[in-house]
Length: 520
Image (cartoon, rainbow, N blue to C red; front, side, top):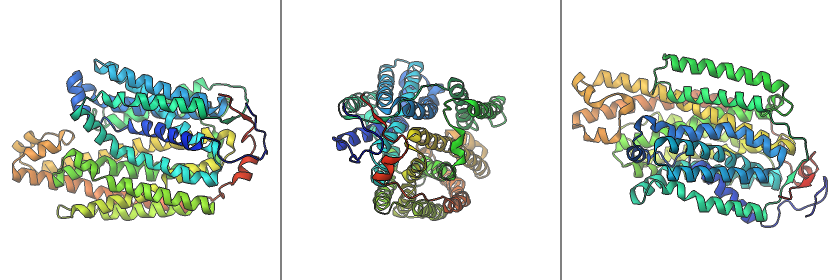
């Protein structure tokens, strides 16, 4: 086993890099895919396992566990070396897949999904951090780009794949498919992965981790349950809000004194970290998930397409993300500069949101697809550029911590942003249905939360037109509301400090970048 000393001249990429990169992409895909793959399978799952009242937890348990796990994986990877942590994350993910695949009731399924989430958060964070260990920032841009595209791909492929497994085989195959892919990723990590690490005394921030978990749990449940399971004025929601604020304050106070804090507060003294993280929360967290969350249902309601067809109609978004991410990655590697891309990406999202705010029942379907593709191109210019900017702003010994912190706050932004958009939309839809439908028809249609495309298609034509018009009137103006949000993001993007991406020489001479090699 060879050792690498600081300043030693080495190649930027190790042997078998192509194989390693492919396994990291598989790991990223598994972690991202399982956030969305069950959206189309849930009605079948809850029917088979008799758990309609617990349906939301199949998704919430995964997202909650993954979000909590992100900062922990980032910190442990910096302290212990990323290879063992990466293998442990895959192992947890596979264990959760097996538990979920064998589940005979909803409780077991939810436990399995939580275990999956604990592993899935690590797959996404450690994969991005391993690339930072193997490739200098300037060249890293072209490898981070396809990783960014994974998020857009999973948002479309996940529901399609979940629906196909459910209709053609069994929803359980959505879990079993993870096993061979996960085992393959473990085998590659064991045989080919050699990573630099620093020998440090490990001090786990147990109290900070517990408070962070409490704060995230209260925040996610507040956002997920508010306005759906409970009214916003319900004591449960108020209690969650108070609990979230108290836990976040306590977390900050504890992190100020912790020897090895999960989220070191000195990160917030770096302007690049602050601006990139805020952009991720505001623009990607709100923008991407608002479009992905509501456009499929909009297409089903207004154009009468099936669930599968509405998923396929989001392919322009994936194409936009992929093309812009790959192109910007190549340009960043060539020039070593990144500031232009968040500015251009936010500007494209402003244009896309403004165009979407003009949608009507007469808008041709191809035109909607163009707008969706434009939004995807905006996201693709930003999603991994921001992670790369943050990684480049800190020494290698903290690359896992800063990567996980950036992703962590983006997830929080996505959760809160999606909840805010959902609350505004549900309120507007309820008002328009109440104003447009006779009282007897309102009893047939039900609440805005129970409105489905199948129900709308079954309505008499006159009632269907009222519901479709109400849906358009409720949703489309929300895209206009997003314009000032994105405009604030654009102003923020102009303040992003540009630190030229380090090449191989600067990267290797960075303090602690390659002090020893992980024997694995």
